[in-house]
Amino acid sequence: MCRWRDQKLHPVKVIERRKSSTSSSPADYEYYVHYTEFNRRLDEWVKLEQLDLETVETDVDEKVEDKATSLKMTRHQKRKIDETHVEQGHEELDAASLREHEEFTKVKNIAKIELGRYEIDTWYFSPFPPEYNDSPKLFFCEFCLNFMKRKEQLQRHMKKCDLKHPPGDEIYRSGTLSMFEVDGKKNKVYGQNLCYLAKLFLDHKTLYYDVDLFLFYVLCECDDRGCHMVGYFSKEKHSEESYNLACILTLPPYQRKGYGKFLIAFSYELSKKEGKVGTPERPLSDLGLLSYRGYWTRVLLEILKKHKSNISIKELSDMTAIKADDILSTLQSLDLIQYRKGQHVICADPKVLDRHLKAAGRGGLEVDVSKLIWTPYKEQG
Image (cartoon, rainbow, N blue to C red; front, side):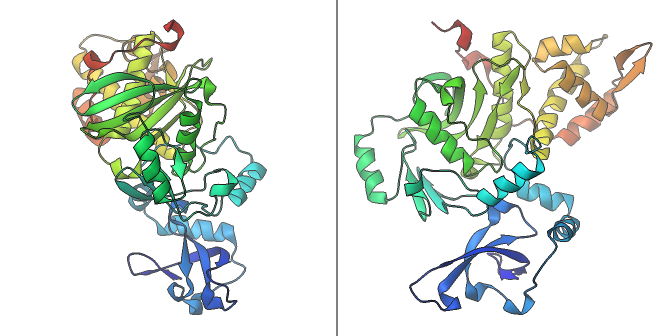
């Protein structure tokens, strides 16, 4: 058991230890622990006095432990811990690859970062260059995303950095919100640094070193000091699978403000401009699917409420840029689809629609399409 920040004892698994001084006394070690009730993002280094040694168990069967953990946590508790971001699932990894991934990334190499006016606790391992590993804190320039080990280095850098916003083109401005499109080929270092940063908060995100193939859409809050990144999503420049989003993240200080929903909606507005249907890159984590299912539900049911005559899945897809398979699976999950005479039929009772819309929650910040000035990549000169 270990005393957590709520001052209560929680069951933990000790992952690793390190010396905190030159002495070899147990009290001079720090212990890296995983709280078995919580997501890996809360793993941390603790001192010996935080551990209750009378509760130590050995040879714990991890499978039994995992099962017990899942029973301890209610669905609400799990969502409370996990609902802050959408990430790619790890279903694409086989068992051996997953074990290798977890072994390699089991200990966070960076504990904190400073980005703009925020100091942020990190959640996961990120494969920074070796010279940055085990730095207690990294300091990021919030505009160019260069990172340094010391505050003085950042202060010197900020005096020379000419940027006051992400590199690339501003394609959206509404009030204090701006969206910048950053071409990974034209801004390779920025793209790579953004991936390093994102990996600190996304567990199973694949880190793409070949950022040339991607466009990054960076959402910012703007004031008289500049445009400050709150989150982003990326997409492949050319996707044969019609993917309109590869990775998405809202930074921790800006979560629960509707920015994640805004980013999802924005990705579909770009698909509409392209004249294509879109879908997020698979596989999605459970939370990712939940976030998208909420978006699809709100968009589709609002149309069905207003539409008085018959409407097909193809027509819904054309109107929303949502892939037909995603529409079908969403409506089936809501029991709004029946199979009659060899075809799927949408059955939409107004009261049922209202109930499902209420359950889907609020839509968050709206994208003002009139403020979007953008040319699809294939048409850029």
